[in-house]
Every structure is written in structure tokens, then in C-alpha cells.
Image (cartoon, rainbow, N blue to C red; front, top):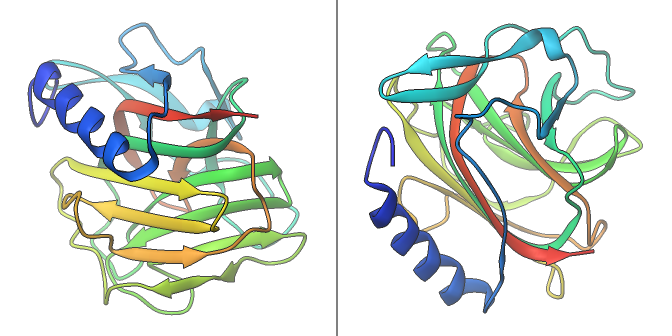
Length: 218
């Protein structure tokens, strides 16, 4: 695999991860962007592009999207097309390219019903009620639902590994950053028990690569 480990090592790690946490979920989606981004649906196609990075291509969100959500929530969203899930595990590589400030962020989206109904995790350098938390957008401005979080996430200019584990029966949400054994955030919510998944940022920029999703299709 590009950037951090070989393809075989990543596959073995990811297989062990999802098998141990959610049972035998099938691999339902993977993308390394070597063939472009035709499988993705961004809020603004002009804010995203395929770029060269290291030994391969990445999905580069390089500017703020020209997008006005119906409620206070992230601007830069790109969803996987035609993939609606209940329980799932999503793993990805991400590189933040924004300014090194307290709200330097990258986001992952899940349980996405429509622009006014979804969950997202905001992974930021420093935590407060609007940063480095798990949120729900439920026909209103985003609301923090984190049960646990950290004081902040150690963004650098290097590549990092992120993971979401979602269990709909219990409502469990777990977010991981680099350490795939100990979550940096947790929540429990059953408002949306299915939805689309995606990636992006609130109002920052970054690169994404090696997306893998195991899950139960709706």
C-alpha cells in the first residue's frame, strides 16, 4: 500500500480489525483513486481533483466547496455513490493540508440520508463543543453527540490512518486515529440506522487514499 505500509500488510490488518469488531462483514467498497474518482459524489466537483502524491494518486480536496448546506454543518463532502449501509467499518488514509490552527480538521460522514440528516466526525487539532467531536445533523445545526473524546488530535503534515466502526443495534460509534485499538471518540445514537458514507472537511483541505469499507448493505 502507498504511503505507510504494503498492500498485503494493510489487507491483513484491516481484515483482522473488522473481523474482531463487527463479525464477518463483507468488503463492499475499496478505492485507491488510481482510476480516478468516478465512484464519488462531491458537494462541489470543482473543489476536488485527482493528484499525484508519492508513488500514486490521491483524492485531493484542495479548496472550499461552493456549497451552502441547509443547516450549520461541513461544506466539503464527497459521498460514495450507490452505497447505503447499516453496520460498517470504514478505514482510510488521510493527510491534512490545512493551516496548523486549533480547528485544523478533516471529517468522515456516515448515516447520510440527505443534506439535512447525517452523522459526521470532526477530527481537529484542539477539542471544544464544535471541534474534535462526533456530530449529528438532524434538520438543525450540527449537535455534538460524543460520549468521549480527546483534548485534540495530533495532526501533522504526514499521512495518518483513520477508522469508523458503526454498530446499529447498540447505536455504537467508534472513531480511531493511527492507533487502531483505542478509539479517540465514542458515541451512542440510533437516530439513523442506515445511510451513505463519505469524506471531506468542514472548511479545510486535505488528501485521501486507500479507502476500504466492510458492511451490511441496506
